[in-house]
Structure formats: C-alpha cells, structure tokens
Length: 191
Image (cartoon, rainbow, N blue to C red; front, side, top):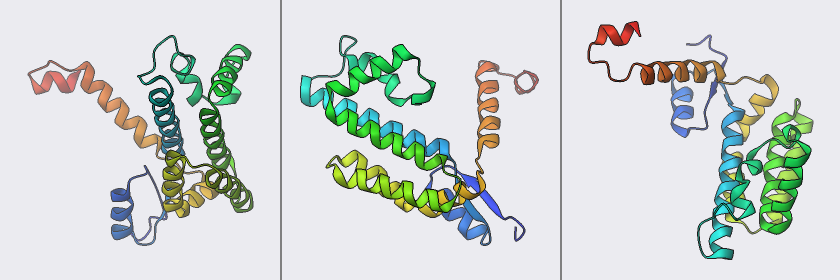
C-alpha cells in the first residue's frame, strides 16, 4: 500500500476518505467524466426549472429546450452545423440556459488544460462566471468543484482516469443482464 502513488476515483467523498485513510501516500485524481456529468446535470436542472417557471409545466416535445435537450449536454465541437443552429435557438430563447451552458463550457475548458498555469487562469474565468450569476445550480457545482480542486489538479497533471475500472464494471453488468433469468449458477457463469 505504501507504493501506491495515484488513485483515480469518481467524485465520491466516501471513496476519497477511504483512499486517504488506507493509502496515505497516494495522490487522488478525480475522473473528468464525472465532473462533466455533474455539469450536464446542472444544465438539466436549470432547463427543468425554467420550464416550470416559464410554462408552469414540464417540458414537451413542442418546446425547443425539451425537444433538443440532448444538444445542451453535447460537446460543441462534435455538433453538425444544423445542430449548432438548433442549439443557438435554444440558448437565445432563454438567457438563463445560455448562461448555464456557458458555465458548462467553462468547466469543459478547465478540464482540457494540461498545466497548472492554464488551470489557474481557466479556474478564475469559471469563478468569475459563477459569481456573476445568481443561479443556485451554478453555485452548487462550483462549491463541489472547489471541494475537489486538489484532485482536479492531480488529474490535470497526470490525466489519470478510472475508465478501465468503469469499463470492467460495465462489462460485468452487461454480462449480468444477458444472463438474467438463469437459476443455475453454473449456467450463469458460463454465459
């Protein structure tokens, strides 16, 4: 255990505590996938809240923000020209969605950095953006990122993720789903 230098984990305070207690010399890297997942959750929360505030109901297929909700969580550089136009329509129709989308993009830019100086400057931009808004969702995300800042810095320096263990878990879960319904354990294991 003394030889373990790095551990890549999800954004779980319990995991972090366990690593600190059992691997005292290990540096913890937070998996960037889970950071982006939190940022996307923030966008979904704002989109739902705005739907209730503006329309007094849940989103429906006729509402652009609901119909194209997946575009709000996609990487901008991966979108087609038509998708970018749809995204612009959504963001122009609701200023709060535009602001929160910008904050999500700042988080993505923060995670793309490769050195501490870039990280610090992108962090300052993100912090300024969050302070400029009154949205509780953005402030909540920033508090979470602040609590995980040390682990984010380790990720920026090392680029370590827990993608391998996540893939192994997914494979095990898929096998379990495929094998569902088997009553004989030997058959289940063969499957």
